[in-house]
Length: 300
Image (cartoon, rainbow, N blue to C red):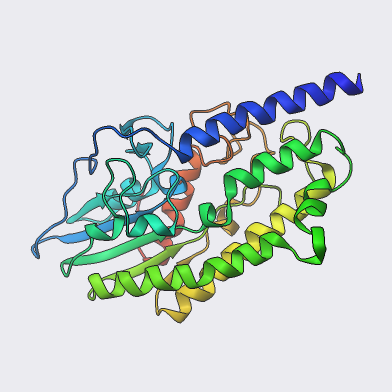
């Protein structure tokens, strides 16, 4: 029975890896701005920058195959509550901070969407810089041989240095550079840095095999995400930007919770969403957190 269970976990991890790879390397096809165009002074212009947690891969309706972008992602939902605001959504699945300056398939450099008329910018980036996809693949694979231990933590702590902590620290100056560029290109804009939602139980207690990480690795991975969010909050404050905490708002709706309750899909999704990504409810929750920080109340 142990061999069979290991095979099941390995198959789930492999399947998730394929989908995560697809999200990180989406094919180049037609690029759109979801039917919204940046204004020229007479309307508030909102530009959404970010990765797949912003774009909403596999959530209906997908309006840009190149970037796996949904018209029900949080920028679209936020825009509906901001009367007189136009949206230019250039978020793209697989984006890192590098894609702020370089094209990604048919998606131009994301910073190119900004100009002096931009009044609001949201930025959600950094997860791919530390390697979200590869971390998930590594940890799911390691769990097969040691499901009750902490093999993933041991892997990233080899040599006495926490490689994921180091990756978060190495990403901080990249976030600084992006925020500097945003302020330079859109000097009148309110800049909002959006953190990442709670992917795993805040308790640190796992839910193997539904989420095929080793029991002892859930707390380590939770802490790594919290460290990333803490870094983003600090960089936002240093750049005089607003930070939006989406983690607190999504606790209790992580990928270990039941369908209908969860806002983050597990590695084998039950609702339309990419593995380990927000579903439509998760995007709605993040939109609510952004609107709360903007002091906008409304029905999403």
